Image (tube, rainbow, N blue to C red; front, side):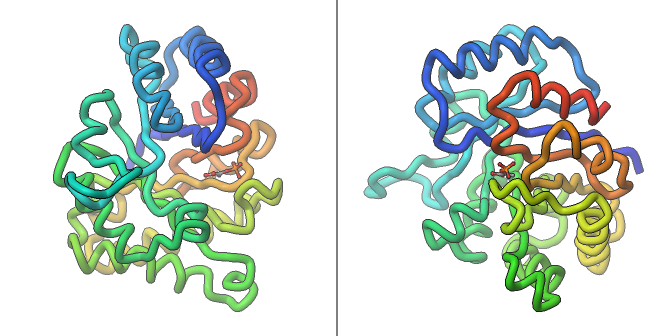
Amino acid sequence: MIRQKIVAGNWKMNGSTESITALVTDLLKAGHSNSEVVVSPSFPYLHLVSTLCAQSDLVKLAAQNVSDKESGAFTGEVSASMLEDFGVKYVLVGHSERRSLYGETDDLVALKIQSLLNKDFTPMFCIGETLEEREAGQTLAVCERQIQAVLSLLGVEAFNRIVIAYEPVWAIGTGLSATSEQAQEVHCGIRAFIAKSSNLVAQRVQILYGGSVKASTSRALFAMPDIDGALVGGASLDAKEFLEIVKAAG
Ligand code: PEP
């Protein structure tokens, strides 16, 4: 099964009007790519990036978070329907920084995915193990537990509309990337787990790798049969580096 590659930049809480305008302008100058190129600015910059990208189809927009609630007295939260006003296509959910710093549980992540699928968004569903869990041989069990919460709430067909990002927590922002073989092993295990519910859905679902991806490591990752692209943090703030990763994806 041919799955389109996705290269998504997670800008986290970085950037300003000036730096984001420059970054997007450089990305747009690069022209067409066979991969889906995605950027995720912080909420205040969604409108700016949406406007900058309005004339072209080259760069898709992602938000970094969403509330599981529709509206009401939830100070500081942003709903899925609000994101509809900004040309957002993807939304990150379950990022390890949200799980570890803001206490997001597997169940809450599943509810957020539900609120996105009730609209027309594609959740980028982040999963992955900590270093302790990896050392205890728990890597796949953790990923399966995180996926199971979504399977239990929404069923396997939901994964026809979800992109998974496998992001080992120990590799995020640390400069320690999983090797392409380590990542492939987990991606293959994730696909096999989903195949227990539906082989067709498992073959279709795009699984990105995230964790200190750089231009220099991306080609080997993308050569792996079950790696369908990358979720890139730090390196996505540098247009040249990010575009090299996009190029490596083909
Ligand atoms: C991320 O934040 O999703 C990420 C993968 O970050 P980095 O590439 O900086 O490790």
